[in-house]
Amino acid sequence: MTRIAKDISKAIEVLNAEDVVAIPTETVYGLAGNIYSEKAIKKIFELKRRPLFNPLIVHVDSIERMEEIVSHVPDKAKRLAKAFWPGSLTLILPKKDTVPDLVTAGKDTVAVRIPKHLVTLELLQRLDFPLAAPSANPFGSISPTSPLHVEYYFGDKLSMVLDGGDCENGIESTIIGFENGKPVLYRLGSIAMEDIINVIGEIEVKNKKENAPNAPGMLSRHYAPNTTTFLVDDVEAFISDKLDKKIGVLLFSKKMDNPNLAHQEVLSSSGSLKEATSKLYATLHKMDKLDLDMIVAERFPDKGLGKSINDRLERATKK
Ligand code: AMP
Ligand code: MG
Image (tube, rainbow, N blue to C red; front, side, top):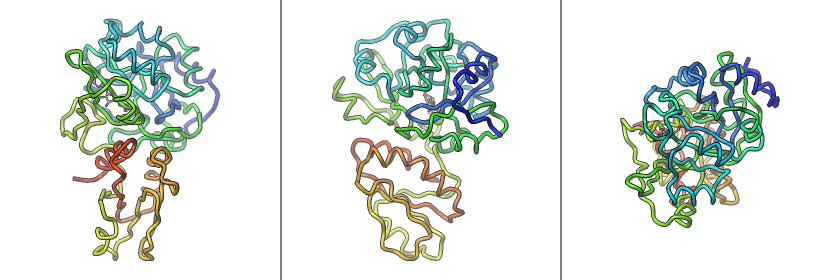
């Protein structure tokens, strides 16, 4: 069994011994290791079965710590950091030579953020090194938002999960980089695009569904349950000829009046996209264990966090 504990000192011990610890953040649980330890970083890639060409996000506890690993911070990046850190925004910035290639997959940029979780902020403050931490799930599957999700995925292979409760936001960070000095949004996430635009104005979006992207979160099939999943505009119409199947439906705010459904989940009865986002992955994890023939999700409103939910659900569907 994985050791699930609230013991920050124990996590420090494990990390100082170049091993890996799953850490809580406000987005999802991360699989963390010392960025300067080849042993720890290799273990992260192995555990996740993540291809080595996919770079990791580095977590720091302060701007000063960030400046130790990045060589230049564009003005708009500074404004974004001021507005959203600590928080669910990842910035892709030019890296210093001291950052190992294994972490950045040989790129001359590094992805960095200050997470907004008291346990992990304390952990980072007490460590002498930043932590590389991709989501704590096997490559391609649903990200974990509780310690038990992480234990389910890795069992004995992982020494420790630092328990910080359920993740508050429940979806990955929004990723922004710069191309020729202009900001580019690479991954929709926990911070809505409208909020980004409020701070730095219009931004180009390259959150495309691709088959060979340089960012794994952009793969056309990612964040996927094992159960065949569909994302549709009209759930009732879609299931009307499939009622011999064991169907689970994932809905935004209203239950359906249909006695043939095997299971229903409503993410926010008050219609809050924030609440729906925070429950999305935990609900998919739960539905995936119900032995359903299919999960049918309703398309969410195409605004704010609804865009991020739709993005993840689209990638959860089989093409
Ligand atoms: P995860 O932590 O599992 O959510 O994945 C980290 C995300 O950050 C992936 O989509 C990476 O490809 C992306 N990423 C990390 N570093 C870079 C970088 N230097 N350039 C572009 N994308 C990056
Ligand atoms: Mg991930």
